Length: 271
Ligand SMILES: *[C@@H]1O[C@H](CO)[C@@H](O)[C@H](O)[C@H]1NC(C)=O
Ligand SMILES: *[C@@H]1O[C@H](CO)[C@@H](O)[C@H](O)[C@H]1NC(C)=O
Ligand SMILES: *[C@@H]1O[C@H](CO)[C@@H](O)[C@H](O)[C@H]1NC(C)=O
Image (cartoon, rainbow, N blue to C red; front, side, top):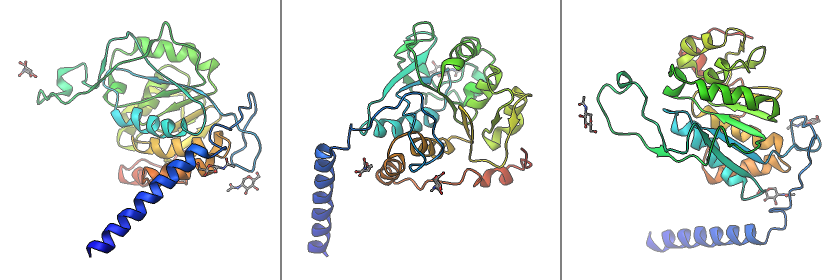
């Protein structure tokens, strides 16, 4: 028992060391060539990729942690394969709490709310290629004026807008989803979809791609959206996405229509 286990351990350790050294010497790492202005048609064989570099994450008060840090974790892993820049955007540089603004949304008076320090305010935000809008209790806040104004202002210059979960509700309130196909958390469908009466809400959908607008269903669906985004938008994206999914031990849902939660929450098929 013991010798077998330690040799397995030893093997795993050597493999880890080997993989680590490979990433150090791999000439492909960092050799991804940016091709600006090019359009992607979907997969690695379909030609040059846009390779977006600069990601902004919107941090409204009471954002959902995984909506931000799930995609961010995947992209951070991608940033070890190609150059990426990240900014965390909020109204001020004060730490942003996940605690809802209204006491009614914390009825047991819990103290279970981390804070995240933004890197830039909306007013001094640098140019970005991609904006990621998370959801959470934030989407139901009556006070989203500065977030909505920033989304409206930046949207025309974005390569991509990505919303996670009920973040689609925040983007919808800013009007930028009007006329687009989009989805959101199926458990929150009834409250979020009225925030965008002119949006073509899609169900069932784990995520939806509509040109520059990518929207995901609830929380962890954002991981599947992000893996697909890496696959489609980066040179060698499929291999990199598989590598990151392997190291994070995530089983990717690869078909955007694979959405068991539409039925679970009685959301009728649409669009
Ligand atoms: C990739 O795109 C090519 C050309 O559009 C297509 O023939 C091929 O089936 C696609 N492969 C995958 C895995 O989608
Ligand atoms: C809620 O908890 C805080 C400490 O975390 C305490 O100071 C405050 O009095 C509590 N409020 C109520 C209404 O119990
Ligand atoms: C593609 O990415 C994988 C995973 O990081 C790596 O093993 C492989 O060498 C890369 N291939 C090219 C051509 O860059």
